[in-house]
Amino acid sequence: MNIETNKLIARGFIEEIVNTGNVMRLAEFVSPNCRESNDATGQAVGLDSMRAHVLGVRQTYPDLHVTVEQQLAEGDWVATRITARGTHLGWWLGIKPTGKEVVITGINFDQVVNGRIVEHGGAANMLEAFLSIGAVKVVGGP
Image (cartoon, rainbow, N blue to C red):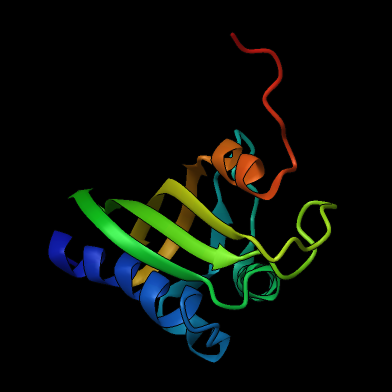
């Protein structure tokens, strides 16, 4: 696969699966042996865990929309800078629904091999989301 094709696969996962919740098409974008790499363990995730993750996020934010802001690729790795927007209407990390809009910026790193994502990870600015729903308050000040 070439770099542009790998970028399209990473973008397609966001636009066709995450943004729609259509997990029936997950295997078109994700390998059955996909690993999550948000920590040092590189734990196996697989399609079932990815499916549960997408559905869980969409339950918390039913109107979730992720915008691809920029993509860079080298070899079989794709970095995708994103902005996610949604209304907090479901429980999230033990926080009851607030009905407030959340905007989260982040970056995904996907390794694409043979046309499927085999490793997925990244980082997100969760502090901004916590502040916007009132889960975290800034103390002190001038």
